Image (cartoon, rainbow over all chains, first blue to last red; front, side, top):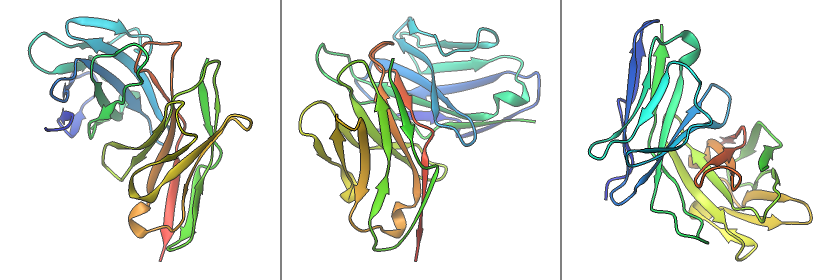
Length: 117
Length: 115
């Protein structure tokens, strides 16, 4: 059972370009979460998605950032018109369907390191 | 609201000596707490988790953590450090106030292990 797969592992973009980060959750997992890690910081929650639904996007910047998790295919985190401050490691995690009273574990991918030049 | 505070940004130990990484939490509910490890340029791996069962939790690679409600602490320990333990460690609390799966991370503690 492959783990959470993220690609690309490293992405370099010039200011103003678009960045697309992909995440394939573990088999059988229907919940996907995106986190951002700035240098010398812990991970900060961005968005929580289920198939075709955004459940919580309270951590997403209001502009330029969007996320989707279509019925088929990976989850995509899209950053339009990137700026230097978007340079960070972006991690995706997945978990199984939540069941009342259980604390589910999130499994993390290896991350995509975005560098904006 | 939930939060975690990792008291040391950097800990350095000698190989074979004990490891102590400190974490204090704040939670309005009975918390679910985790420790994750991140090796350089790698993803995060779950070391252990506390979910209101036994207060002493054993994890992988010889690590364990003790949940102490009176001290609001969840410190990570290991009796004898190994060179391969050098990594960054994150104390994490599950955010019940937010969406299920919203993990709140501490800022991390970098562990260095000297030969």
